Length: 345
Ligand code: TXA
Ligand code: MG
Image (cartoon, rainbow, N blue to C red):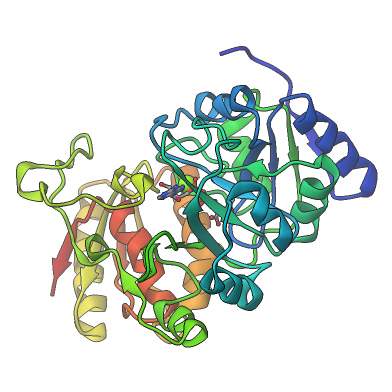
């Protein structure tokens, strides 16, 4: 792909103006949101959206989230706003919720990865909202990382991956939440969570007053071929409904192993493994989060993986968190980062 200079922008009005002009000309702009940084293009322009796949090295069957700056703009992307959609957006937008809804014909199939549905989110971040509004179009934006790498939670992470491959980046504060939005499929009567996030199944159930399901693959730990991250034959039932969930993801350069079990035993096992690897001359990184503070784990996790990569760590040992609330979403990322390599102690 063609090399270009990446313009570094701030969040002032003139910066947003420049960024919006780039979007309107069919260019690529990375921008902060409350979850992770996104890599944006005009979501209604198939040619512009196609450039995102190229810049990220992303498989083109993996659909993108389209970002809007007002709830009414959902109607630009889908024909019928149901009562359930209305309830959820009134409760959670702007915020870390992405709804999958039937797509209007006007939404290019490049944006939706060939699907007849589209994922939509109104982010809770002033710079993101200003950019969408100034551009005057919905902005298609996956996370602004090279495909497969941990999602970026600072502007520097974006530059580490995409400098010279995109037109501009809006540098804001580090992202407040640190993991991507919850994706919920609203195309059938029983809503289904396709990707866990800060907002949980219980949050949605409470607002809708009805049952919400989890994509059953979220509870699976498929057997991966650790060399290339592909699925082995024993994992043939692993068909997540969100296309992106099947790929090897969030992967640090280092080997990564998760230790699961009683807290004190896990600490001991990690200390032992660390000693052993250090004696073999390897550089070891350790992740030990406070089980009672999954929000902090969410905030730090991707940044921690990137920091380990920078310092040339060979292997990362991480202790598993309790899989409830935000902890469930953090563990979903952690399992993927480690290629589902878990040691029970
Ligand atoms: O927090 C976020 O959601 C961030 C920020 C930038 O908004 N965006 C993000 O986008 O994480 P991305 O592309 O990295 O993840 C989108 C996920 C993928 O797993 C994709 O397969 C799924 O949503 N998805 C998108 N459109 C879909 C659709 N129509 N049906 C099912 N899954 C869809
Ligand atoms: Mg992503």
